[in-house]
Image (cartoon, rainbow, N blue to C red):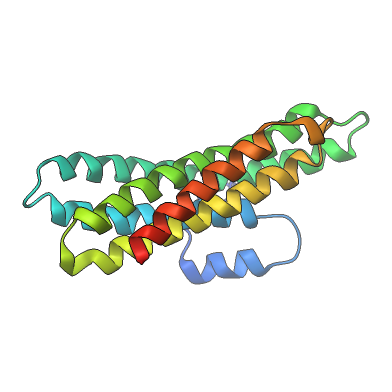
Length: 190
């Protein structure tokens, strides 16, 4: 890490992260929170997958996938902060920058896709994983689905800042994907 560069959000203690979220002004906010929530869900599901691998070797592949998803989600939390800072800077520049608006849409789309995948894995682990960890799998599925729904909402909100927002098919697609994650998590929970 270069001097003066902020720590990656994945390295920030939870209490400090909570303070940063509550602080006035730009910084980590909704998109970062959705990404971090997806990372937490991936970590919790990873615990279940590791336990399941004792009797089902295929679960080890899921564990490795979840480790990768957790790391990617933490990276997206930082990407969200950078994208929003770029958007704010472009908004004050003459003519603005459509690329900056696109970045604040793409990051939540990436969080959405990741969170949906975590939900799918966690829901499957809730059904087929170790009974002793079913609560962990269900919680992971619910957290990941919540992250997906949050990211979907941000896609719509952020697209509204761009041209032709009413015609952008990504809003409906994001809503459908988040709805599927919600349905998977609800089936796992009930």
